[in-house]
Length: 130
Image (tube, rainbow, N blue to C red; front, side, top):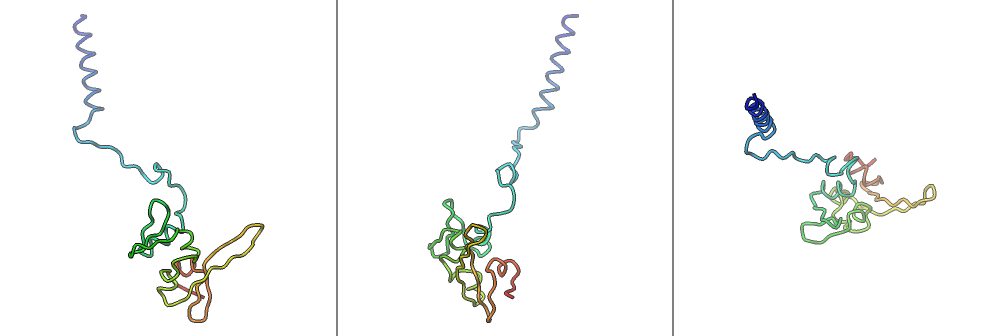
C-alpha cells in the first residue's frame, strides 16, 4: 500500500510539472505600455517631435536629421528649431507667446499662415489654421 501512495504522489507531481512547465520555447510575456509605466496621454512635445519625423533621445532632446537638436518642450513651444516646425513646413511663420493665466505662466507656439494666426498645436493636430 505504501508503494501505491508513493506512486500516486509521483504521478501527481509529474502531471503538475508537465502542465506548468510547457514546452522548451521561452514564452515570456511582452510588457504592455501600462506595465512599463506609460499611463495616460502621450507627452505632446515628444509626439510633436516624432510626428514630424524627428527622434527624441534619452535626454528629452528632439534630434533633427542633421544632428542638431532642441530640448523637446522648447521645440514644441517654438523657443528653438523654428524652421523645422510644422508651421514652417507649410509655409508659415512661428513665434512663441507667453501669457500669465490664473497665477501661472502659459508658453505656447503660434503659427501665422496666409494672414491667419492659430495655435501651432491645433494646426498640427487638425491641419487647419483658422
